[in-house]
Image (cartoon, rainbow, N blue to C red; front, top):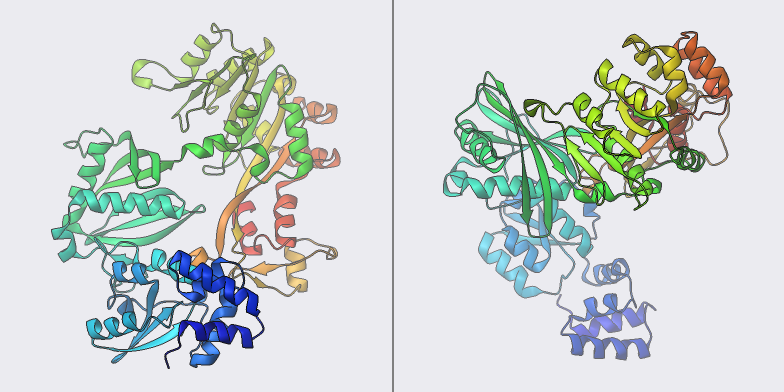
Length: 551
């Protein structure tokens, strides 16, 4: 039954949530700001929104639902436009025959309910939900009604670009929508992959590829042509790979994208790397360093010469760590120069250069020239060949501090890798000051993670003799806030190997990676596995995640 605004105040009084004085203040605030009474008391901080909905639900005999953990039915979404849902902060949940269930934070807006009933021809059933959760659900499930249908492809939990809609929409809008959505989701890469009968679009979110859309075959070529034009590529060339770059700005989104095409039997595959300049300004302490490792890294990067290596597989955050490190060293007193392939983020007051093989600017050629530019600190994007490594060693021996990256599984195996590439072990031993190995692990969503029993099996997997007092193991569940993945965001796990005399002797003697690692642990090194395990014990990530990343 309808309830007058003053009656809501009376309900809150009877529930003991507000007093008479607060009621008068709320009525004045409501009148002055043109708000409904419920929103007024929430904005004033007098009543929590959940408490308000509980009181209203009890009075109106309406159920409350946490839609953050609810899987919304696509058929229901088709009944209500995104514009209408956003305007009135409602979202359809499910459709059963002639009954449409709607989540709302304002059950007293009868006009909206009546209009929905007229527009849909359905009986409207109400459940109460938090307004913020409703808005997030709209963002997640509607995506963009201008170019996306709300149907799913057979056998795939992905949305399909409607052929009918697409024909009436500009390809520009479709591409812009995909880019905008990917950035808002925090994706690092966008994959467009032609298949025999369609093409799939995948986003890499928190290091894991997820399929979101499929598009009709006849739409693939125009979409790829649009991207190639943006990236200043040759649209007539589809037989060889191409690389390009472009800037994208829309609404509150502004990023650079690095674009790569690759020919396949079904057409050109396109991958776009999203380069958010803010990531190039991130601070070291925000990367997930354990306190002691961060302290030691800060100390070692202040050395005047030598080689400092950051190692790990592709996508493990090596470049971000190096940029964050250079930002701490950046000052008017030092000349910092870099050679990268490509430059991912522009760093203020640092002299950056990009490899250009066609012009003869290779890592090796650039490094030779840098030595005549009076550098204090040099960053070489990657140690790719023997000549580059030898030049880096020469730079280190002549009083320069050299940063670079190498693809190795852990810190200790770096020495074996350099030896296998033909570098003399005594040169490695005398120039390598530290090796930082790292991985990125996904963090559990704090809204939906579930506790896990500390079983003997888990204890064995984690190699724990006994459980620490603070142990709190959790597993992923999935909700609207994490887009049903169970994870939100990533953090780095690190191991820092600073060679002592024992390790230097082992390197010169050609010892194995296992022998070097054992010596490093005896010397106090905190290993990658130990760092990852600590995240599990603190309930920040799952056992499955560290097994995926560190093994």
